[in-house]
Length: 392
Length: 135
Image 1: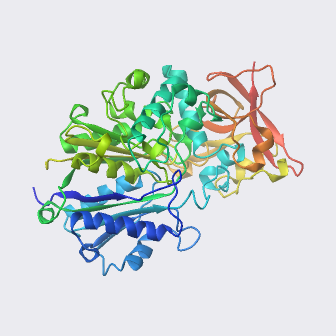
Image 2 (image 1 turned 135 degrees about the horizontal axis):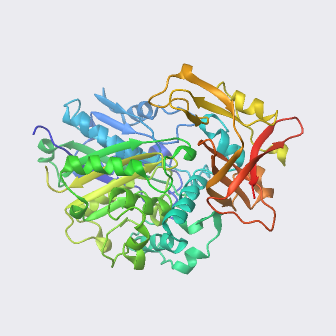
Image 3 (image 1 turned 90 degrees about the horizontal axis):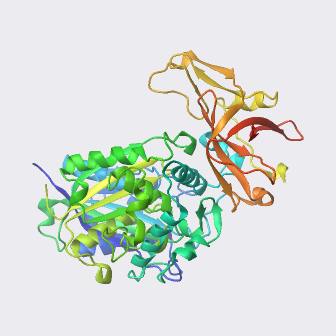
């Protein structure tokens, strides 16, 4: 049995004007705001934190990728017992929660703060063609493949050719996700979207069009993770980390083993389900990193919510929309809520809030178990996390 | 615009590929242990010993594994080229390569189509292996 790590704080950052942070913010003020809000929720103080996990692209140029050092200094955390700064792209924060679980479980530390902040929209720092043709980017950049969208486009084209999914299948996902976003007052886009609008949006890299792509926004978030024992004195209900799994297969999209099957998500989710002793049938809310619509289709299949190649039928007729049978990306996702660059943390924040029952208009009826899944790079890294109101 | 296009930052593992391309040769790596051809940036697989890897010239023929037509260019250097095709091609020897496919106005492409290499040479001799349909 032993120590049971659980989430006791989860907050995101308020956005305005289609996904912008208010003027006068920095990536650090965003993270401080989220940290203080999450700690206050739980009834904790910064001095209770003895472990910190952080990642982001804001350190370059500047303090580099040594963000844990910057945040320890900025937040005045004295002698932290555990530090984490792994960066595997969009699935980073799910991996960091897994690592935090292991550290807390092993008694290396008691209470971990996970942090993210980004001003990529306000700073206009996200462009498609700024990468040097270095190392594994040598072929992609020289051929003019816009990254990461071009990599996902290759996978989408392949999936369509092998399994007969269509642009309409992908549009179903974009439209359903927007329908959820209409109930999230912090979402960048809150007006409903139609299949026709997705189909006629600007082509980016075929078969992906503008509405198949995640947003570019600012944003941030924080999670507080501690032990069940400590959670008994706190203001929030503990949300238990019941299962997790990771996998990774490539850096360049050319080395994705099969572009039509996200094998790493099959591997990571199986590990998570085995650890949690749960199955897909036990999941009440699913939060899948939707960097692109195709990411969602590939992930649903790979996790086993449907058979490989049958995602097109699974998402048909708005099945993942608010009135549908399958609750998916209830915050409006990276497609319609926010996408500050490394969206993974928001899958966990939303799942936690749904399990707490504080999601207002979009609140599901008494969900017990949540699955969060992050994908990083160009379908390169996968991390699955299963959260539950019940301890194991 | 060719002069403004990004060029590879050549490293010890990719130097031979780019140097032999200037001689109109497509050279990739071959593992004598696993009998597999492979391309940068992969260097090792679980079962191979790096001393048993050699460079071999390949046929330059292959099939389209996947492709995308780019309408929003990867930066201003590619703005005049849109729409252009980037593809993942499975060479007849088994390795996959990311490259451009050049087609004329009458041609259409699909996954599974046969393609063959051509060498797109710049004024200073720098050369990029690209592909055309092989019908």
